[in-house]
Length: 294
Image 1 (tube, one colour):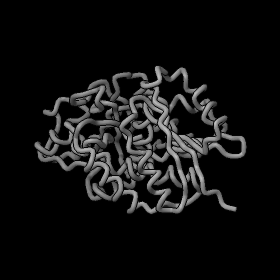
Image 2 (cartoon, rainbow, N blue to C red; image 1 turned 30 degrees about the vertical axis):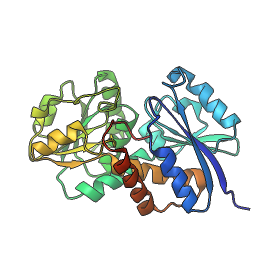
Image 3 (cartoon, rainbow, N blue to C red; image 1 turned 90 degrees about the horizontal axis):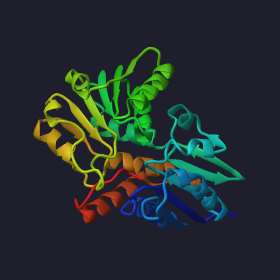
Image 4 (cartoon, rainbow, N blue to C red; image 1 turned 60 degrees about the horizontal axis):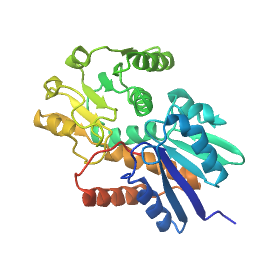
């Protein structure tokens, strides 16, 4: 008899307003399944990344089928797993963990989620030289995604320069025919860039403001964002004001969830239906605050 009831969750910080629970639960209902999606919020529960081993152990012991993993745990989860998909291993970050047959396998659907969204909205744009702002778990996934999108020169900027350097070395090792490097200062890196991708927590309620000086944006550049509430962040608003083409974080949020749902349930979801449900929820939520997709 095929499994029809699922228990999954999301581990991250400041995730109370995440749309992931409703997105997964509604798709499960449409598929004739019962799925409960629980939030495990480090901030609300007085926890930190140091508590991640205990939280994953507890979820597994409680009979969870899987977990989504978001900021700031996507890289910290790696040593706690018994297996990784080829993509997750190459990226060095996971956003989905499946408990099955006594094992814990990690996947990364952020990478495919960003790539699908980019191809749909900005697939015709030049992307020879790209700047990536953020070298955390989401940034790592996007760095690998843009290599698959044909980027020839990628410059990675992060407040933690060592983290940017480490990511650049890892991606360069997988793509020796491309230029992949870290940059101390975003200004010279952005000067001749075809596009800029923002992959940091800036824009979340706890991290308000712009991640860069908007004067660095040029009309011929495109700008991509991973924050999805509101769909028009302060960065995207500034970019549009300067005539840039933009990509909001909604597509990545939906497509990473599409991949995660299939890993959790073994059933291929209806992506168009999930996108329509997501857009209805975003419309209802309005533009009260911002957060990273979970």
